[in-house]
Image (cartoon, rainbow, N blue to C red; front, side):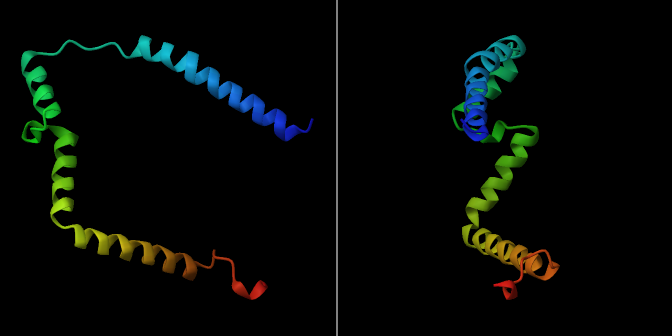
Length: 103
């Protein structure tokens, strides 16, 4: 057998062992639930039910950003296309792109 099949078998076996054994054990050791106050429990329950006005911190920033993006889908699409074109143009002008004259 060649090196490639042996490498593939070893990699996939190690990945399976990690997924089935090590990660769940580490998760059970590290991921202990923290005691929550009744206010924190009420806020979490409200968020699970869809009341995002109770969000705090980075979750609130994410909800605000997402709500703006949902209200302006055409602007977001145009901005994404402009960024994609800009990245392609910058890559082409940077000199890192392979030239078509070699073919």
